[in-house]
Image (cartoon, rainbow, N blue to C red; front, side, top):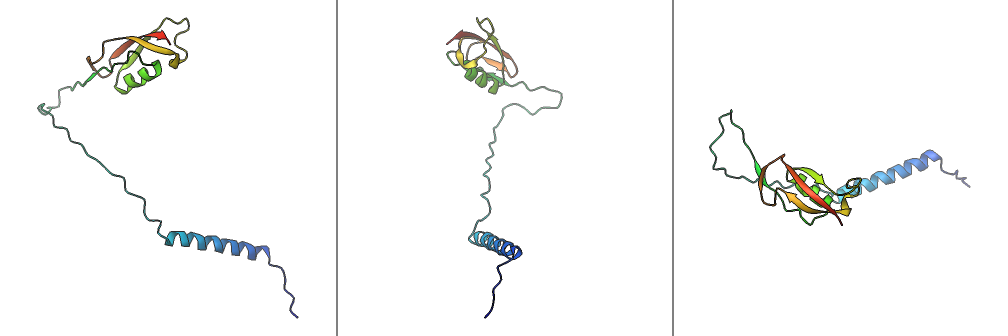
Length: 128
């Protein structure tokens, strides 16, 4: 009669590692292919301006978005995304602490005015 000894911890660890490795190889063999290549889209805009000679400056003007009636946080985001600085004028004692509690009542300059990027747009606020 043969006496069987219980498996050692080394043998158990090797068995688990072998099983894991076989599983990984199986998943790879099933075809986890390469990641999808990102698509690139190139847009070319034709300019009617003559080419620059090197000592000239290009000034980009952008239309001011209409933010009257918008919440302050939304108005800030839209104006800053358009490239403008924002100056707030409110009637609050401590200013506009929570932006979502304020609404734009007026803006200067008005919407659709063409301004250089980096110009300041002043907004007057009312409590919502």
